Amino acid sequence: MSQHTVKSYDEELAHLTNIIARMGGMAEAQFSSALQSLARRDSELASRVVAGDARIDELEQEVQQFTVRMLALRQPVASDLRHVVAALKISSEIERIGDYAANVAKRALVLNHLPAVSPVGAVLHLAHLVQEILKDVLDAYIERDVEKAVAVWNRDEEVDDMYTGLFRELLTYMMEDPRTITACSHLMFMAKNIERIGDHATNIAEVLHFVVVGTTIKGARPKGNAVATE
Image (cartoon, rainbow, N blue to C red; front, top):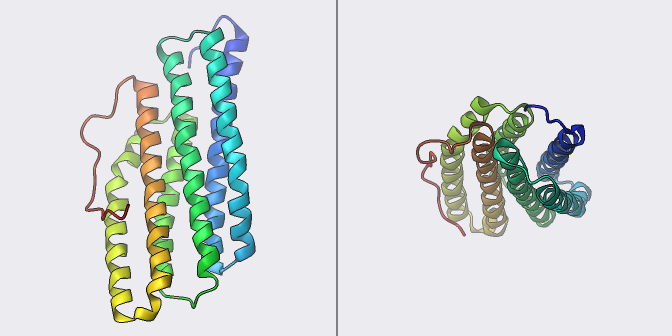
C-alpha cells in the first residue's frame, strides 16, 4: 500500500488492519477451543468459548465506529476506499465466524451429558479442514496475498463435499441405532455451523481479492453437493 502525505492517515489504515487481525486471531482461537471442548468433552472450556464471543462483537463495533470516522474525515478514494469498506465487510464475516464457534461450543455442552458417539471424529475431520481454510484466508488478508485468497475460494467445494458425506453418515448412524438420534442431531447442527464458517472464510477471500485487484474473482464459486439443513 502506497504511503500518504499525511502520516496519520497511514497509521489509521494500519490500525484498521490490526483490529481485523485481532478479530481474526480471536475467532480462530474460539473455533479451536470449541473443537477441543467437543473432542475432550470439556464443558468448562465450552462455557469459556460461549462467554468469549462478546469480545469479538465488541471489536466489530470498534471497526464500525472507526471506519465511519475515517469515511467522514478522510473521504478515501480508490484503493483506500476499498480497504476501508472491506474492513467493514470482513469484520462482519469474522463476527459471524465467532458466532458459529460459540454455537459449536453450546452444542458441545449438551453432547457432554450424552453417551459418546463415534461420528464425533468425522465432525472434527471436517472442522480441521475448515480450520486450515480459515487460517489461510486470515494470513492472506494480513499479507495481501491474492493467490492464497483464490486458493481458499477454490476449496469451498472440498468443504461442501465433505459436509455432504458427513451428513449422510450421520443419517445412516441414526437409522442403525435410534438411541443415537439426539446426539447425532446435535452433531448435524455442529457440522452445519462448521460448514458455514468455511463459507464465511470464502467470503473474506472474495472481499480481499476485490481490495487488492479491484475486481471480483471471475467465475462462479465452486460448490459441492451440499445438503441444505437450514
